[in-house]
Length: 400
Image (cartoon, rainbow, N blue to C red; front, side, top):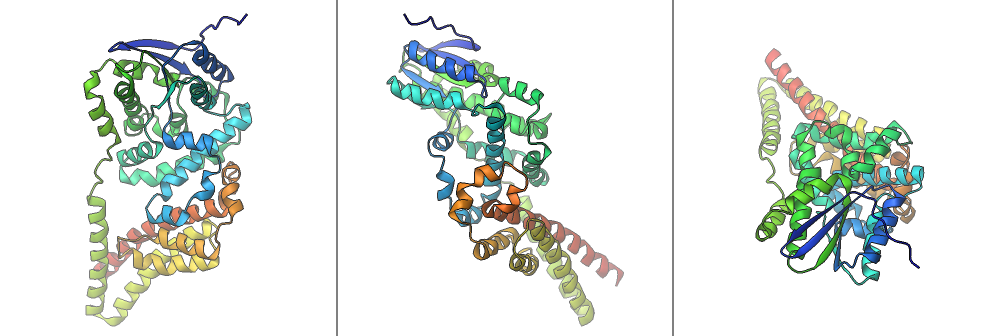
């Protein structure tokens, strides 16, 4: 005789247009949650199972070797270097949890997806694409905080190889993305909005759009921290669900003034050169020397700190002063492209990437991770050098 299934996790029931949504709150690092989800699907007579996953995260579960097929040059060329670094840092954090606790983070979602298939229930990927969430988060943060946000995510890996017991307890009620950015997001509505509130709205809209009036019973497996928010938004009119989902997938228009500022800085520097030469050739060449030494020097220092190849360091030094006068291309991309040429990542670097970046030194020893660091540090050095050198040029012109 089969033992009676006793529900343990927090849950809510919401009925819309004849469809009963059973929202099951889980802990992303709990074996009990994984077992409960499996038993619930087997005995709950559900027409569909919705999980807090997107296509990319499901593929990461099913195809652990997908990183080996990544075209790193195209990633950098398309401006997704920072996004990939943040995603890798998130993956490393999750892997540390798995090793420390003996439980794969998100195992209950993977189990739900597999069990839904074996029971013949429709699988619904309810969460927004993680790339869209990361980009909206990035756009939601003021531009001057963006490098700090990325550096903070990566820097969190160096703090300790063990996750504190307090953090583990928070994870039992929270969300993996939220926990990863917790220290940075504390008190920050700019981060909390795309990470939590928007995803609550998105998952509810996706459920209403795909299931309301179509299925009898739908099991919704999601982190306990999303339970209240999704339940509340499920009570919104279903006919507006598609428009809500599309709005939450749309990328906010990028602010134009940072680009205008970059062109303004270039114009000021070039004008400074012209004014310097009009006063004396010696002053003009001196200003150009200052520009190259400060801008190129700081970008080269950043590249060296990332353990870039000596050829890459020289390339960053020469490229940064020129790319800073052409905002359409960045010093970080040029430096990373040189690093890729002189130290082409091997298949083993992609295969071992996840494991190696769990340790702080792995970011510098793995060729894939190191290329991304070269991209970041060369960009930071050039950005700092642009404003310091520009200020120095203006100061010398005023003093002359």
